[in-house]
Every structure is written in C-alpha cells, then in structure tokens.
Amino acid sequence: MPARPPTALAQRAQAVLEHNRRGAWTCPSPELYPHQWLWDSCFVAIGISTFDPPRAAGELTALFRGQWSNGMLPHMIFADDVSDVGSTRIWQSRKNPLAPRDVATSCITQPPIIAIAAWRIAQTLPAADRRGFLAEILPKLVAYHSWLYRERDLQGRGLVTLIHPWECGLDTTPPWMQSLHRMSKPWWMRVVLKLRLSRVARFFRRDTRYAPAAERLSDDDGLRMLVLAHRAKRHDFELRRMPPRDSVLIEDLAFNAFLIVANRAVTRIAEELDVGIDPELERRFPTTVAALDELWDESSGQYYSRNAVTGALIKVPTVATFLPLWADVPPDRAARLVGHLADESGYWPRYPVPSVPTDHPHFDAHRYWKGPTWVNMNWAIVQGLRECGATDVADELASRTIELTDQHGFAEYFSALTGEGFGAEDFSWTAALVLDLLDE
Figure 1 (cartoon, rainbow, N blue to C red):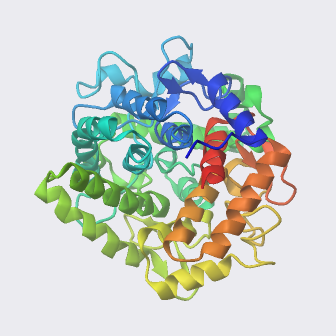
Figure 2 (figure 1 turned 180 degrees about the vertical axis):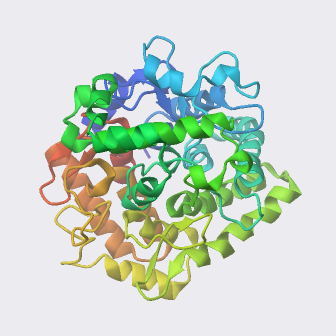
C-alpha cells in the first residue's frame, strides 16, 4: 500500500525538522537550544521515522558520539560551531578521562528514552537494515543501562537516583524546586538572594535573550541550579562521592518510569537479535518494576518522586504521575490514574495535560514546567493510556494535542488554559511527536 500523502499539519512539522537539522542530528531550536540534547533527539527520531527512517536511525547514532567510556550518555553534546562559553565552562568534560576527546559534552544524563526510540525506529526500517542498526546499537544501550544501575542505584534497590534537576528533563517541576530551595547555601549565595542580586545573571543567560523571563526559570532558581552543578563537579559528578547535606538527591518518578519502558525495549532488541545481555543487568530490570510501588501514595491515588536521602515521598502533584501507566502498573492503580484525567479536573483543562494541575497552588500558567502543557508528556501519556487499555482517553488526548499545535504552532510549551505558545518557536520535539500522533 502506498504511503499516505502528508497533511498540511504534517508538512509544516516536517519543515520545522528540516529547518532545525544540523547534518546528522537535529537541534531543538537554532536560537534557544543550538546543541544536541539526549531526550530531545530521541523524541525527534521517533517523529522523523514516520517519513525518513534512515535519518531517524542516524539521529540516534549521532547521540553515541558523546557516550563516555563508562557507558554514561550525557544530556548535551555541544555543537562545534556555536559559541556558548557559559555552558561549556560549567562542564569542561574534556578534563574527565572518561569523556570523549572529539566532542564536548555535559557530565550528567537525561531520561533514558534512547532504547525506546531505537526499538520504535527499528520497526520502520527495511528488514535488511533493521538488524544491522540494532546490532550496532545494542551494546551501547547495554553499557548505558549498566552505568545507570551501577552508578546511580548504589544500594541495588531498583530506583535510579538523580543528582541535578537537569537530569530529570522536567527541570523546574515543583518537587525539584522545593528540594532545591531546601539545599544548604554558601554564605555568598544567601547574600545574593537576600539583596536580589541574582537578576544580574540574566545578562549571561541564553534563554532570556529569546524568550520572556516570565516564561523561564527564575533568576534565583537559575543560581541555585548553577551552585548545585558546581558542587557536583567538585565530586566528578559521582553519586557515591557526593555529600547528602550539600546535594539534591532524588529518585525521580518520571526518569524511573521511563527506565522501565526502556528496559523492556532493550529486552526486545536482544530477543530480535537472538542474543543475550549481561546477566547482572538483566537481573536488575525487574527490581525497578517492583520498586516503583514504593512511589505510590494510596491516599491520593498518585505516584510521586522520593527524596533519596530521607526516603520521604515529595507529595507535590505533577504530570509525571501518569507516566507509570506506560510501565505496566496494576489495573486498580491505572484506573485511579485515568480517573484523574476527567472533565473539570485540574489535570484536564481545555488543553491537557498541564505539568502541574491547574487547581494546585504551585500552578503557573506561563512558566516552564510549573504549569504549561508539553507535547512530549502528552505523547508519553498517550502511550501509557493505550498500554493500559484506556484507548478512548488516549484518542481524546492525542486529538486535543494535535488540535493545539494546529491552532497555536509548534511551540516548546503551551498554556493549558488558552493554548498560547511559550518558549522556543518551531520546537523540534513538538513537531516530531505530532507527526507520530498523526501517523498513529
């Protein structure tokens, strides 16, 4: 059967991805985000696979340029032709002997979407190319997942611990910001915050040059983020060396839910190739499924991230509560989660699903991960809803997401109340995941 001609919306989305293309990889936004980001490229590759599978495979292959010798995949690979001294000075990856020599990278990771993307893309490749692609990528995926369990699950309990909000992808969601605010502060930082001097840092921020400050991370929180990154740097970003008092260590719900789905993808890839994977790694996979139960709160019927030091759940509701739907949660819990996606609820405004429910005190309609709707979260929730059999809700959310972008463009994020777009315009993963929703 011949391929269907793309709709007008699909043509616009493909044009965004072509404009943001940088040779073998795609940047999220030429002005605001000119480098290659880990989970961005994974989402982008999934969308590109609907019309150009070889390019999609190349997008993932380009991510492994940045893989460290210990298996870690960094959340950023810096573009050679972009002057971004501020960002590269934070990391200085080439000083670490484990980092690649030919590219500069960050020194932390991001949600492990890459195995999910690899499996999805493999289904779109011709049979002759699929096996070669999977055979090349599987050992690198195994190395990455092994690093996650070896270096970030030190007690072998099943949940990966993150050391910085930038690792979770949902950077400024209230659970992380609440924990960041409680972090111990050096004396000079207390003075800067008290005298409101952190606004000076805005002159050095890239994001506020291209988007209104009211839509972005606050200056105070930006300073806290940098302080935390420099503290982690003193310990070479190694969890085992980081003192809990001066760190923010969280068993992040979104990251670990994605990890369960990604582990499943690694298993499927190995089965497709008829090969085994490291037995120790394979043994760890079910521990994450079991440990996810510990993030469930029966009274509210939601999942939450957890403080890795105290063991206390961080009971601030966010969109992440729905991601376990994709990770085979028990049917009774799935039903309660789907129930939160009901008309007139804080999670189901005119343009669902907000990153923070609209009826919560932390909700901010305009600011980054504190309230707006994100297409990548909607896309992941659609996958989860279909996984648990809630196909009607999945179809409705997919339809509303497509309608949102058709009316308001391919913005980075959107008002859950009005649909107004915020952040970067013509954002790559927004365009890419709309293509995937249209293809479904």
